[in-house]
Length: 458
Picture 1 (cartoon, rainbow, N blue to C red):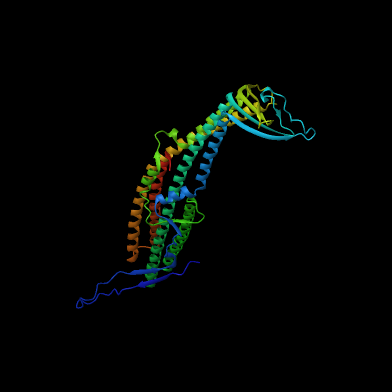
Picture 2 (spheres, rainbow, N blue to C red; picture 1 turned 45 degrees about the vertical axis):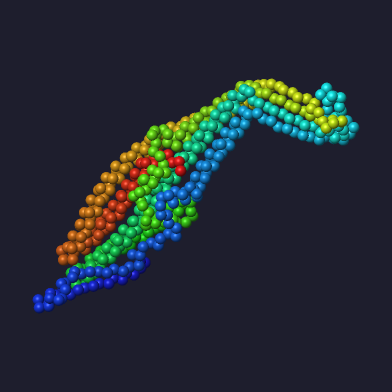
């Protein structure tokens, strides 16, 4: 049930004072003073954003999507470093101490060598030192793997840029939606106030015998509809604040300060993002093309597994001797060629799998191109459409306002009906809301048109 309404009516005597009393003021028209609990505005959110820079800073600090995209870049960099490691020299050293339990007086696994210079390996405990160095000379698969990792890294960086663009666009949309919801809630209260004033006017007319019970019911019905619109608008405002809180990285509602400059949002967005010269350089398309390159090189890496590889290996071995601390026994250098013969069909299956991945990446790129082309065309067209809708909504609002004022005047003098009064009031409320929404849609359309063809590097 709606909260009770207190309507205070002020009626001034309409009789004309005698000409001999010039000090008496002229008669005033009927006036109403309406008080209703529902006319109180929605309480402001506990946390509010005042500027675009403040909102963007919160997104940088708290966005989980941004952190995830940055982690993707880190993963791609790690994969590239792993791929590079297979092409660089690989050196390691190993030291051991061995004891033969069955033959304690014999050196473990050491054969006489001229390098020992007549010295004998230590017993019963023999210490050994082994150092090895390997270097790949010819490995086509490793180079293809490095190229694939490099393309994947470029794609991750482009995905990070696209994530920033989408976060900027989403933040702008949420801010506009919240400000629009604030304005709609305010207009709903104005509409309820006007409906209550019409109800008071009709009730007074009924008390004076100038209208009937049907007129009173009609205006009260209009008041009920205005209350319903107000309740729905307030809930929409709360949801918009909650969506803004999520966009900023919070788990609670966040409002927009009344001092927030919505008109300057476009210029602030231009400072955070840069317009593109070519649509193909949009970050999401760049990321998709990089994924195609990465998948192609990955497939070539699998195909290169059929080719032989050539490498260089060197080993240095030393043992502890008696007398003396120790001697190096052998130092070898060798060329190693590896020829794959048969691995049970593993390589062929890997080639088929990566061929399918490459085809999927190519189809994804083509789909993204089509989506981006349509998205850009719609964004450009939406600016003209939004401006036209604002113009028509402004004209409709002016006509609705004139109609409502004329209808009220006609009803006050007894020439209009309550049905006309209710209809004109409802039409004015709808026109006010429509104009406000169209203005916010125009702001959003300009932001969408800019950010669909921009790169954000903040």
